[in-house]
Amino acid sequence: MDDIVGVETTGEDGVAVVTFKTTSVSDVEGIAAASNQIKQFIDEHRPNSLIFDFEGVRFFSSQVLGLLLDIRAKLRERDGQVVISAINPQLHRVFKITNLDQIFKFFPDRTSAIRATKTD
Image 1 (cartoon, helix red, strand yellow):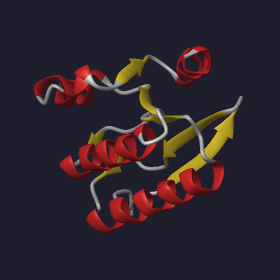
Image 2 (image 1 turned 90 degrees about the vertical axis):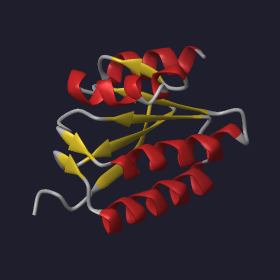
Image 3 (image 1 turned 45 degrees about the vertical axis):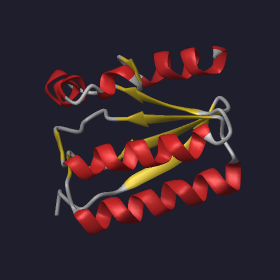
Image 4 (image 1 turned 60 degrees about the vertical axis):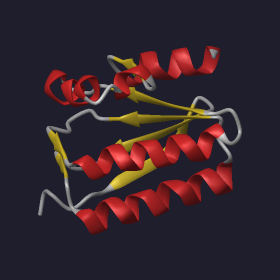
């Protein structure tokens, strides 16, 4: 099933990257499981920055916004940040409509996000 949420959280060049493994991120239980997986990664690896790579994601539910804000709050406890890479223009509109484009940084691809995050 394509709507079951799967994420992979890795470290690349000293930066944590969360990659969604599905084109549709909408399963409530899957989003909750992904959130727990990401929080566990943060607790174990203590990254200062975390990139959410939306490459290939074509749809997400509003719970994903909650996940992003929750992870952002967790990282901000240590002056960390959440950045977003490779989000398609239709999904980026959701951030603009909700004014969340004011609190997240966006990059066109994972490489530029990693490069910018390492210099912050």
